Amino acid sequence: MEDGTSKAPGYCTGTDDDQARQWDVRADCDVRQILDRVADKWSLLVIALLDRRTMRFSELRRTVDGVSQRMLTVTLRQLERDGLVSRTVYPVVPPRVEYALTPLGMSLHETIKSLVIWTEEHQQEISAARSAYDQQAAEEERRFQAATG
Image (cartoon, rainbow, N blue to C red; front, side, top):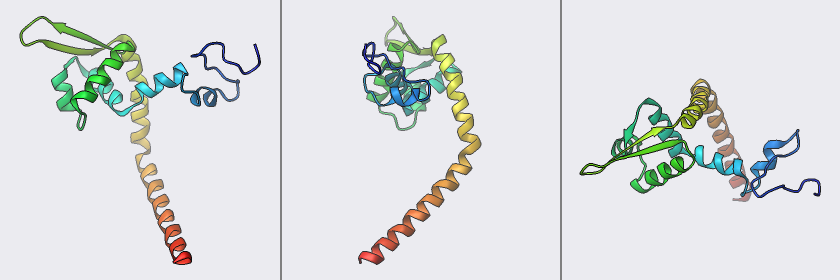
């Protein structure tokens, strides 16, 4: 096999010094697809909420501000397909469906929790960086307008 050729469509390891760039640029990479799924805002919120307890669909929908019914349905199906969320249907009228994290989902929640802690610890630095960037961009725009205007 030629050096640098993938062994299989989902095979995405790279060189020892630059593995992340190797899988990040290929759309068919399993790692990239999983990260795309679990790192979207709705999945992160659902996983965080389900860490606390089992919840019904309607509870999730009320709690996750801004999510549409369709988007929540799609998110829950994807998380269930990936083995992160379990879905239990109770044979009652009206039907009752509950969602819970699986052990795999609970292990992911630990990682998400670290990300949230990092964000909370650095939110003021990020806010200051954003303000400085926006101020610099506005000044550059003013200079450009003055030069071309």
